[in-house]
View 1: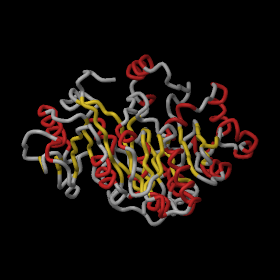
View 2: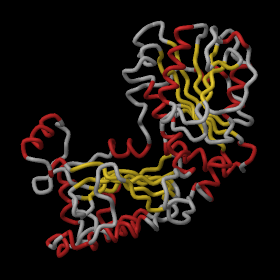
View 3: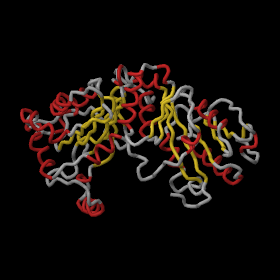
Length: 419
């Protein structure tokens, strides 16, 4: 919803290096018709456009209609420069629509946030759409045959792997342009689209060659802040129905592997999403740190995306967020469990969060993980995860004695595997 009828619509264009963003932008400008489009390019090459698309003369202007931000990423180092540039453009207002083309290493979410939270840019612009250009060949190859990720090596630095960027770009988009479709077979293309739709179920998907897309489709208003962050894994967590009896069952059967097989449907709820399956794993018993790390380092290759909250039996009473995209697996300290806080703080949290699931013994401590993939053996993966849970004897032991394979300070991250 616009704060002001005069708010300028903005389209955020993202995609990996070489996906075809600049080509799409050129098609967009060439077919703009009566629309006056301003463009802000992050660290990209020259684009030939009419000089009168944007009025005014700033130190960021290139060819009059294109503002360029270089030597950095607009989702981090150049965020302030981005806001300065778009506010200045808005003041000079000689255009109907702004297109922000992010570099191939920029995530669209923080860029969109600039235009939707309390900033000078948000007061002047409304996000119309978030478009992710996907190189069909690159996406298919990044996740192996038919969307299955090939895992390689162990990460030892902070470099984000390509698979993370590909997945996160799709998960935040409301329009996905599957480009270079001529470079994959029909079966490969179907597999890519199936995975895209599983990662972002409500996104519109357009197949194309050479980035040829109707400008009206790209510029159409389809962004809704209420559903902007509706990635497939998050929708699965929020939409997976389970009653109180079901929740209590987790604690009861977590250590009793023999009872899992017949109860699979009660907790996994796998569903077909355009040929891709997903299920949610919930437990009220912590993981053994060493066993969990070993499993995460060797996840089945059929698992393409997984994410959620983990309860790990470490010396620090904190929750962890696990995120996996293809060959990349990372675990980050999310912060303390509410149940670990002083009682008066717990009471305040519980009053303000009526939907908080609370166990009388363990409070909010729990594991909730969503797994998305093609050809997954759900039962085998669930059994492997359950094997990582503490046994009854381990539950009664000193958890500090397990050693700790995970960080314990808020915000710290462990790179388990990456390409």
